[in-house]
Length: 270
Image 1 (tube, rainbow, N blue to C red):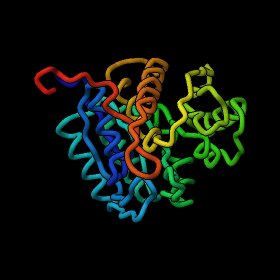
Image 2: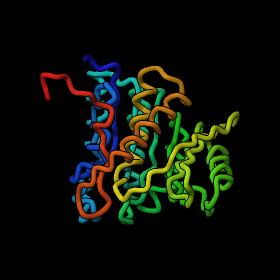
Image 3: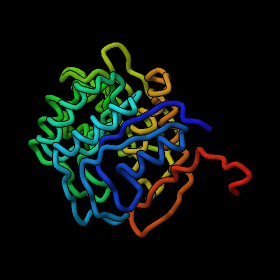
Image 4: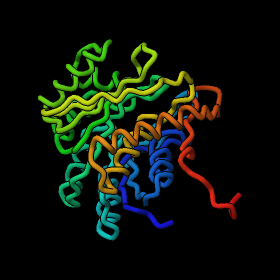
């Protein structure tokens, strides 16, 4: 099997392997594509929480992005955790240089265990400078609440928040509905022309670490292969739902999802 496309991932590392760069790499690979990385921070964490975060210097983040892309041109870019204004500024400068149109921004702000991963100045800069550069942003409900400074408790609230983000300059917004208290999953895609609701069965599990990273990477991967935005979101959501359904159950906290759910091994590897 040869990779169908190339994806550059700009995000933080998760030592436990469930989220961040590690989840992104697994997702892109499991969906049949080639992944490159620019690491923005190194975290020490496990399924129970984050112990420490070590920032990578903005200059080195730029070096990773530009030097990799100069040799292997990505078809799409996924952006995850950017922890400071200086890092966001560096990424914006690099994006201008590499000129990739298909950019998916997952505005990572809080870890599953509740630890804050980004400061307030960076949140403001992300909202006013970076969000407008992306083809799609994929906030969950807590992230959408931070970005819009509103409370989200219903699907209608999700739509209102999405429209607010569009008014702020976002091109397309997929708000993930996993935090709503409901029996069905509703993820809502919004732009100036459409409101598209993806309805799926909700699997109750504590093992959901890395779902946001995985979804944004899955969508980016499908976009990189030439699929349209709605189809990319649909397939990305399906991949994550199946990964949650597997209920991998590793660790004593919020365990990871099963990124291998899309892979059927060749007989010689079994």
